Image (cartoon, rainbow, N blue to C red; front, top):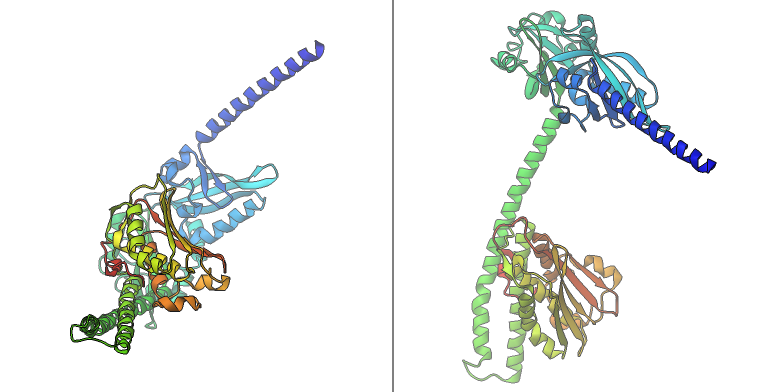
Length: 513
């Protein structure tokens, strides 16, 4: 009994202590929130995790505008490197007291502050920084401002209310090859550092910003600069300018633009030539094919066996040439980004049945068994019917090509989350491991004596890949030599981004490439 009472007393005491700790935490949080100075907390990356009311008021922001953002966002540009070094000291375990710096409020006004900060720990690990910022004074401390100004690593200048240079730092003089006597008191617009009327325009905005301009140094060197500006409080107000040399970046960007424009023009010329070439190649083949069919049908008289065999060889060669031209045209549209899809709601099972029927003649010749299985939960999908038909006939034709007589081919569709997955499997000769990565490359054909009977262009799988990826799907193969192959692809049930209405596969008659 005594032990039980002791345990009850201990539990009651623990409960009282927990309640007291919770109360103290609430009081502590309330004290921080209503402290007369700005209180802030940063994580180990220097991002704000807390700001109190006073900090919000001084900066003119809602705390949610800064929570999760880097503390460098509110620093004057020339203080970033120095203040980052101070943060690194605190994150290494050293407290900082009375560190003077300057920040910019939402209106673009400079606030000169003094910061004390110490590490925040979770156990022995430093997880952030806890700090207090005290405003030094509303107007700039001239001595502090002068030190900040001179210590800047970039060219800086202050232009007064009428556009004259009031002060410049050493980096400015070095960058633009002037002496103090040659710039102080002179008009910034007249010397080419600002455009006509730009100084008054920036002052009228009353806030910080940036623009890009080309500035010429005294020696005539003309370079591109990003110019950060802020309005300094006063009567009248002044304009602080910070010049960052971005000439190399601008020239590099222009070089990229010129190269891109040249490549686009070359691609257009190549495409124009290709279009003309394919048209000129296709045009004579059509009447030749027509007359060949008339000859084979003996409209111009009977044929002996040798004549028929010769004409059939010519006919097959022409068909191969036509397929090659058509495939090259399709692949060109895919690679040039001109592929268009005409997406509509469709039944996957119906498309599979149509593709199997179209390939049935090839399968019957080899006495192959064709099976179709479509899951009951497979929904209607949005896709280009011609493109899907072309992919399926290509894959089924390949399965026929590499499956021995009296083998089996299975076409299956199933729902896979927000996708429909279709697979074409065979129990044929399979594909060697080293050949699998090359299958979807242009003109690549698996080395096999079996394939000679159905020789293609070597572009079919490349086209399949382009058509499936245009739908937002993926295509791949699973195979082992001697164990058959399974080609799979996925298509989203809904097309989130419609690729504009369709051309690529409309060429497709459904015939394999």
